[in-house]
Image (cartoon, rainbow, N blue to C red; front, side):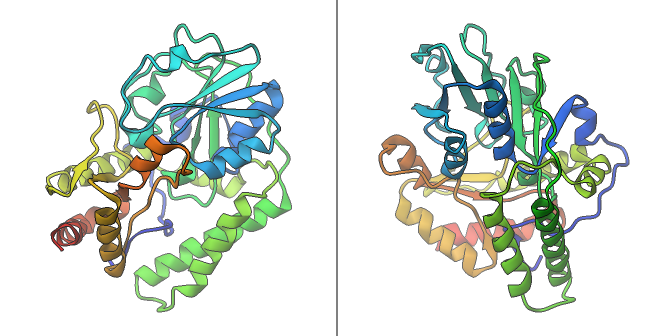
Length: 340
C-alpha cells in the first residue's frame, strides 16, 4: 500500500453474503453528517441543557452550542469504566444526556433509572453489541467515519421515539458531496499510480471538511444512499476485526493497546495509549514520515485536565478493510516506529 490512513479513497460497494447498514436500521433518518443529527434532535425537542462527556470532539461541541442549548460536561473518557457517574449527574427538567462508545471499547450500557432523555453516539462501533442492544431514546452516528462515503449521519430510536423530519436537500451539500466523491476517486487513482500528485485531492478533502462546519442541515444525497444500500457493512467490520487481531500482537513498553470489553464489540482503530506525550509524538512523526497517517481523537481543552492527559497520549492508527492485503506492512511500520 502506498499510504495508510487519512481520508477514504473510493471503494466499489459489494453486498454479496452480508447486510447493509440499512438492513440493520430500517427505521432511521439520514443527514449530511453526525453533528447535524444531534442538532436536529435538539431543534425539534427544545431541550434547555445537554450533558456531554468531557472527552469529546470539541468541533461537535461548537456545533451543538450553535443551537442555543446550554452545554454542561460530566467526567467520562476511554479509560473510565465507572458506570455510577451517569446516574449521579445533577439532572434538571429540560435536560438531555449524550453518551458515547469510545473507540468501540464498551459493551452494553443501560440507561435505566436515568430521569432524562438519552442520546447515544455509536460512530465508533455502528453494528456492535451496544448499538444493536441499546435502550436509549435515540442513537446517532457519523457514518462517514466508519464507511467509505463522503458524507453521512444517522439517527434511529431503540424506544421508537419520533425521529426528526427530513430536511430539504441543499445545493451546497450537493456540491460538497460531488467534490468529496471526486477527491475519493482521485485518491484511488493516486494509490493505483494513475496520477502522481496528491495536492488536488488533498485540497478538495480539506476544503470540503471545512465546509461541513457551516453546512445547513441537509439530508443524505441519493448517491450516498444508493452506495449504502449496496455496501456490505458486515464484511467491512469483520475484515477490520481481522486486521486488528494481526496488529494486536504488537508489544512495547512505551504503550498499551486499548482493547474492547467483549468479542461482540468492534475496535474503531488500532488505538495506542503511550506513557507520555513526547513518546506519542515521536512515534506519530515517524509514522507520518513513512506515509502512515494516524489520528488523535480528540484535541481536548486544557481545563479538562484528566481528559486532556489521555488525549495527549493517545494515537489511533486506521486498520479497516482498505488494508487487508497490506496489514502486515502496516504492522512492520508500527513496530519500527515503536523501536526507534
